[in-house]
Image (cartoon, rainbow, N blue to C red; front, side, top):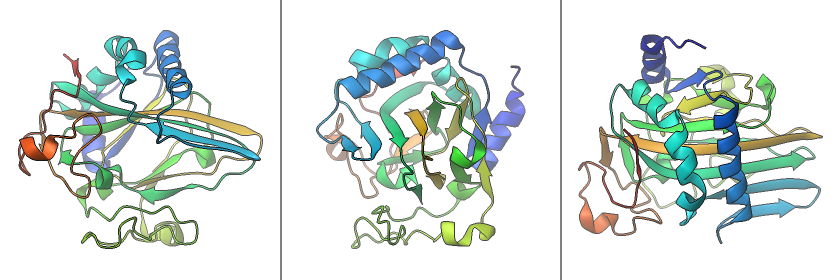
Length: 266
């Protein structure tokens, strides 16, 4: 597929999200799936697994991630795609997040911003969201267009009774808006996706996931990257597992740099 990069960059900057169909070939998708499988075979202590009538698994920040991901990252076009979307380089790998959902109907992932949880911000940040299963529009991830240019909200506690309840009540950030109850007030983007597609979105873009329907399976991998125009912004999380000394090295507003993060492009 030929990509109009001027249009893709403009969309990413305006909406905080862009869908790029078919940018991974079979080998590249297979390498990403192999990395995803490595994560499932090498869980962290913080991984969340539920195996009742449903299967729900999520894990992230594996301290040994490069053992399973370095070859894939070196051969993947995704870091260079980030650079083209930002019109800026270099690109560093921040961390991975893996999901497996299958079985009966699981609840949707509540609306939230990844940027609320991460001690960095700026123009050059992106999540690359990859699916290994074809998903219809009503099974896919949803995004509030343009929300990356607005408020940073408090983190969600993911309480099924009220998805806007903050994880830490004492933080000064505003409470999340009730997007699901007020969908008509938001410009929501969503696409059916096929294996080989990649959705790129900004850390501050509000997003939420559709439920996994009975008899369906959803295997997804999120790869997070940052670039040159990224700065330290401690928010609620002052450090990351592979860079626990960040608060002693950086002041808010300084360029976000640390040897714990692999440079993946160029």
